[in-house]
Image 1 (cartoon, helix red, strand yellow):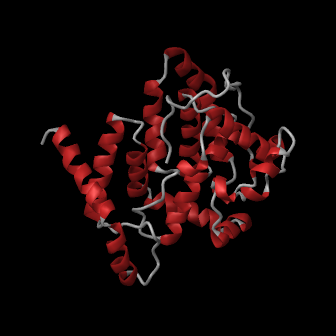
Image 2 (cartoon, one colour; image 1 turned 90 degrees about the vertical axis):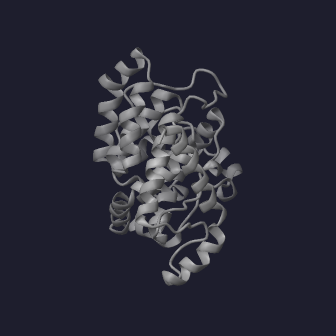
Length: 276
């Protein structure tokens, strides 16, 4: 079958699955003793394999398909999510997060209070990142294909702290900044989607930016990702007042070796790699 025909048929299947999510969720809850969640779409192992293959092909053809990247992450990350969940359970702060299930949304942020925080604090720098890059935490898609309610939350938490990682690492949303964050995430989480992004992302860089990645940013990102405390075990919402540099030291994250600060205010993220 030609790739174009395969993608067309696969996308039709994906849309049908999404359209019938509500009805399927009811029966799935009874089959799994009510342990699933409202956005869940039950799938067999064969269906997951097809979804992974289709989303992978679609994401390679168009890396800006956030929905395809999301599906790829959910259908290939089971073992990595278990490992991340166990790390959170073994961390007092991470265990609290798993218990309370906080969400990072505009509706949960006290923007007025965060704006009043001093420069250099996590909360103020996070808001600055959102403003300068014109992004919002509300753009993160809900998890659908993870067949465990707790693991689904771990994946959701990973998505919602991604912009906080940009803030912690001092990386903008241009291509080089996104690839550097992907290298950090690959080392930190082990999610196949992150490994794939870290592997293929450099192919989209110019020669000069690729040299910066290989010589400086890449080794720093891998080293920090490997050594740092689990990024999902940090209750960021209770640390807005903390100084960003102090938080980096606490998490064992080295300061960025290069300053990639945005040069033009309100730069868009059209060239960023979609993260889900």
